[in-house]
Length: 381
Image 1 (cartoon, rainbow, N blue to C red):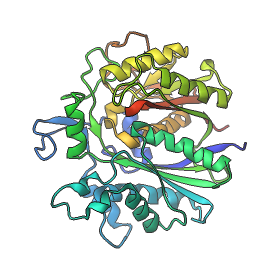
Image 2: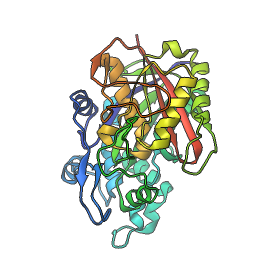
Image 3: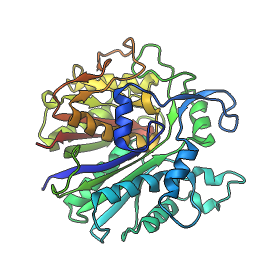
């Protein structure tokens, strides 16, 4: 099989509307989380990372698209447009489109939303993005809980290896809505302060929103400077519980094993881990167990939830993009919110932005229903 690369990319978030700006804010340890007091979303104040509406409108207006678009569609189209333009790849029938999201246009179901309820269908979201940007092939929608963003990279790689496409564009996004915020609050998983992944005083998640896009390609020509090779990937569902992870980390453990086997790497090759780290009691504990079973307990590790919150179907992709820049800039970024260890097994949490020669990183994600995905990326020499 030929090598597959992750290349041109874009992040739209509360920390900026391009990847370089976002990564610089992460380097400077600036969080996008803010205290939100909006009774239309939740009766009590909560912390979240929300894209500025005026900035989003201004960005989308520059594209001169005709018609009416939802907030999520504006986020996704604004992000993906930049990647398509930067790549200079003609959108032929050899180019695929993948959309990853957990809830899509869920707000279209709200009263007085202004859109038909059919706009909430994920297939409709795919059609809108396909037709607006001019893709020839129908969009493939990946909606597998919170592994959707990183799983989309694995799926794109497989399509290219099978010869279905030469290039695949991925756009991921989820937004902060009443449905999502109240849902996590009903699980008693929502923190009323900035989240603290892996910390002994962690209280739960902050929900955030981003749109992120990336090009997955089989050609080494015209790659972006931060491009990486995809060495291996694996996915496993432990089927433990609808919302609770396996207490032994079995699904995550097997996913990483599969990624290592395909990538022909071992735990000694991993320079750092971009982990899921939601700051819930069970997720962080599960990860500590799985990583130690894999002999990864001493590898530098961070969670980026302290910058964006948990961005659901986009989290795996946006965190992968930051990881690409981490390799390119040879820099480990702080895991915001962490002060004292709070897991039964030791983890080497990154507590200070640190220069370090980097070559390979592991990205992992876990989600409701027992889903787990792991992908290994390598700097291009």
